[in-house]
Image 1 (cartoon, protein in one colour):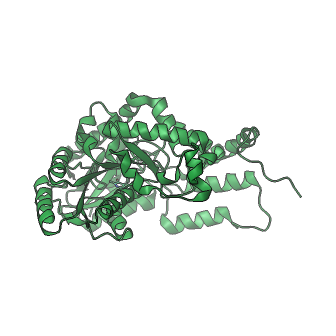
Image 2: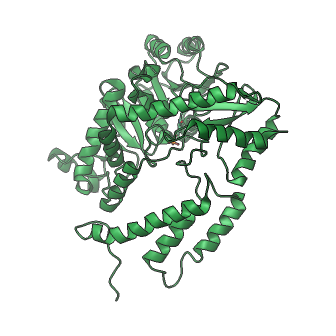
Length: 463
Ligand SMILES: *Cc1c(COP(=O)(O)O)cnc(C)c1O
């Protein structure tokens, strides 16, 4: 029998990892050079063909060995990546991860703690507890938080808590949300067997407090029950922020709970000049934050916060092998209720490393940079004779369109840039029209990069 391949952990792990990391880093560099732009040329079929050709047999009888497999697959993946570290890759809330966060994530993989029981993650669970307290305090001045896979899971938890709050009071749950809310809320309602959310129109892009108040008044008289209002701080399409202080007041008056989906906007908390945009967030009963957006973490780095730690008791769950009553009584922390998952990566590590390394000021500066770039882009668009701006940016999303183009030309222009491999822009349908969307999350992007982006669009979008 040959010796089994080396492991990542233990005292010998680093020695085994070092040469492999050299291979990985070389392959990443070569792949980025092969690609030579924000995404691979040629569109889906060409990319899949090149990948199949590079990779060959994925389950050969006899393996190629670590070096060859890493060199080939990592290079192929990098060559075919839409790389958010490229300034012209700016479609989605898809951030370029910081090198330091990615390095921390390597340690998480090497040690592989699993956060479902203390005996698999002694220090990792203690670090996670410190981090969740820190983040909840940052948002609410108190409270508790869970680490999630992202906004989708956090919103799911918010609706699950609403269902359980209602059930505990033998009430019907009602969810009130805006047409501007993230699609994951609707899917969560479906998944949890909740009634369809009352979806209020948002003609101005954000929830109108008067409409929310009227709906609350009508619901409390027609169909009394437990009501959760969900608001958004940083809409996915336009980066708009619902009027949080007014919504918090209204929810308070009507005895409704408030969840704020700040998956995108939460990063503003770190900026001294922009934190005021999130006034009222602290009054939410729960919030969604995604540090794999304005937090520069490799996915996943989701956070779900609650103002009242007792709300999380709805998630308590027992499995004898993970949190037997006598183990818990003897002082082993009970982790199973801190997620709906069982095996769980220590995503807290990379987040904790980033917060510690950069501090509030460092993170705030990154947030300010991308928001400032969005204003630069907006200025370039408004002074450009051929482009129209949707609205001045609220966070770092800029929506624009060529003045003379039809909607189908705009969709075509976007796909043309994707196929050419020259730029990755998103699309949004707002005010009955189609817009190109640039979501700026790269703190290294320069105003010149943005001028290049507009030139590229100008070259393809002409009818
Ligand atoms: C990104 C986003 C989500 C979904 O988050 P994932 O991390 O992709 O699951 C939810 N809500 C808003 C407002 C978002 O921007």
